[in-house]
Image (tube, rainbow over all chains, first blue to last red; front, side, top):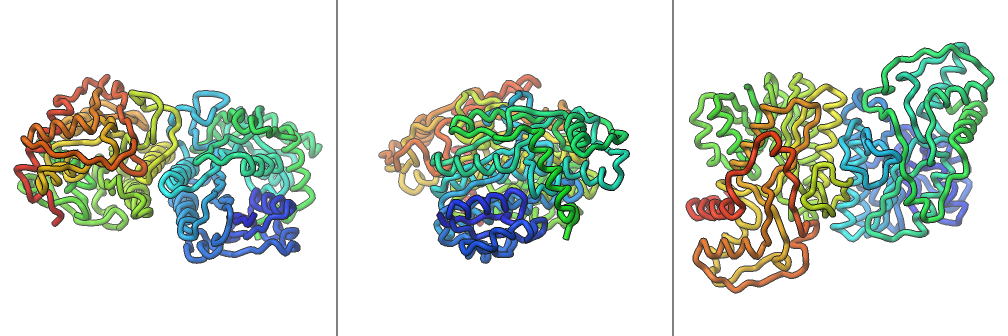
Length: 317
Length: 317
């Protein structure tokens, strides 16, 4: 296949790129390198089937040229700083919603029909049903990030209906693993590296979250691309398990051999728009034959190992 | 109250403006006059509590000045040409989604906390449950219009959560009545005026739709503003009844005393993204004590009477 991966220099995008290349596909990466890192593409650059276009999603002519001739676009580029929505209230709209529209327009202009989209379990807001299925009650958005992704999902579905495209939309839990550069494990590790004797935790530590290891995530994406061809396909993607933030802290500390004093910022939520409990019903993607290989604990430990081995990943370029 | 009405020169906006003024409130109308008409504000202009600012939602400085000092913003301005989404695939996103973000930013900048938003039953896509309740299963969008409105709802809810605002979101069925200038009654009347002996109907005529008379719509809005103060309030708004397009044709023809030959474009849907059946569960707004005064048939007949008396409304300026 000739594929385009937006956000190819990002955490999930670079792993997907590597796997697509390993399977013999062509990959055109598209990334503005705002948070992506060229280091993540070191292996890809050695493959003649890979090229990277440095560009922004909102630069429609460049994007259109990039997707031209592709069989499928994996649209992973996004502003993924979930916690900081209220500090930059236009950023999620611009980069995630308008950016997705730009991808769709580029595809329409060039006749590219298939798109895979990285959405998020945050689109469920604060769900009332656990595990939360794809057809949960119409949610009320609680974060600008979730709002921007539900908006992007709507655009994609409407383009599928209006212009004969096909979409696979994944609603991810938090993804963990090698090249992970934001989120709670990253924050905790970074803190413990600076001060192993204490750790500041957002919220009361009782938030319950589901996590998925990045290679399991990529396997699910590739399987769905192979197996489903409906107009709009929506899949939750996570493990069937969850952990409390406090459990995660325990695993990280025990793995690092530290016993810090814990300080909690308090409250049920870590930040405005944080959902105190995330557990997705993943039976739909499992029915295709997928299941995760790593437990949440193993995913967390691999992440810690990666950060320990790659201290450069802790800093922004 | 000091109120701002975006889309004040539009169909629903101008009626709302008149009713707010009649209740003694101040109204600042905001309209780019792209589809709104100054004629609709003739009565409002005679009231010293009214002023109109001609401006576009995307002109944030002008909008910010307009909302400054308001107690509440009624955000009705939108691209409402539901049928033509695929002809202008960026318009709904720009005017409805980004336009709503602009309203929210203007409110945030000036400390205005309450917003009323005109959303649509189209956000349910093609629902599976009838009548469709507000918490129906998470829908898949089928039109760019619906997608743009669900995106706007998400932004509004996220701003309520993130910035302490309060919202009342109405998901309207099609609204009918005086000053109605688009939709099926308008199209049918316009056709029959030009050629009373035949009528072209989009789809197979079997589409079932719910309609609501505009004054009933405005009464519901005003009642909700008086009674509800939750963070995010979502209300379906329609009648508990529906009619087939064919029934509506019969009522219109009998009211006009014509017997045209009927020509159908065919298919279950009138256009891409048309929903073959719309019937909303309005028990939530009814529980506040509201109920519609006019039946669908009466609403349709009033609309026809209005168009007959105001032939200028059939033409764009």
